[in-house]
Length: 111
Image 1 (cartoon, rainbow, N blue to C red):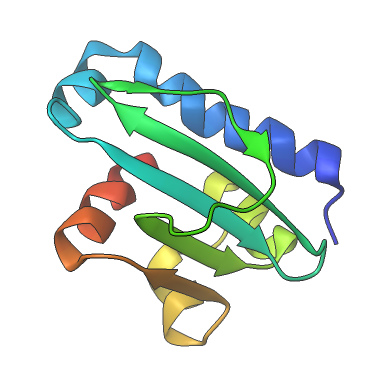
Image 2 (cartoon, rainbow, N blue to C red; image 1 turned 30 degrees about the horizontal axis):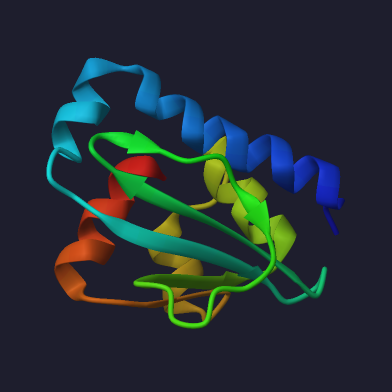
């Protein structure tokens, strides 16, 4: 199990992707809330993506996030380190996602 500190580092790595013009342009006009729920750590982190930027993550749950990703900490770390495919994790139930299909496909850019 990854620690909360490791998860924060991984999530900040996702946020850093918005420092590139390519990523910013792909999220132009996109305004959604995103929440990661970690089943093994019993915690959640959320952010908002808007205007080609991603706000800093905050710990806690949103009442109705636009996008909800539920997983365990090791699965997210594996996906972000490239040792686990998001599609493989999803197909075996280690990664669950709720939201519109269009938004979820856009979210793949960050993974």
